[in-house]
Length: 245
Image (tube, rainbow, N blue to C red; front, top):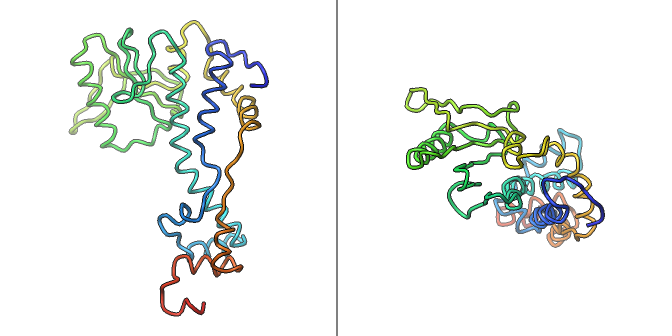
């Protein structure tokens, strides 16, 4: 840790540790086996190269980033959820069940990164889970907390189940800024303050972490120094004629 962040609602040490743990999970490089796990389509990448005016190497680099981004989205979910391990005052991140809970306050939270990541079936399943919770705990309030919501909100979650509209004041839809206000009671604009300081914290963390580099191009050279040829041999090396491609 190189500087003071002075967030107030979380210590410098804890926010640095939490960001560092997330960075540790983050994918920064791929090997060829991982790159081709689902068999990369060389014809699609050839179209991309010619249509977008990029070299095949640039297109492969972009494909590496796209693949890593899929797993990294999950790690951002880890960042948002597990920050509340440091909140104190009864807040917990359990291993199963709800994503975040506070048994003392009877608050039970499901977290989503974006408001549009749940389809209808997933939304209904989550809502019914919350219905069951408030049925068995007369003091419980359940919240669907969205990091990227349509707006700043803390309102009743209205949903259609089996063609009927349902709502309950104890089942709510809450944006992450309003949830921070609930968790870090007594502090103001806590989520905004974290966002402002996050680049500085990441700079400090990344300086002390070694990056894993992709070895995709080095391993493709084992097929042929011609990257374009290597890409096709990766997918089609057992196909007729490709022994002389």
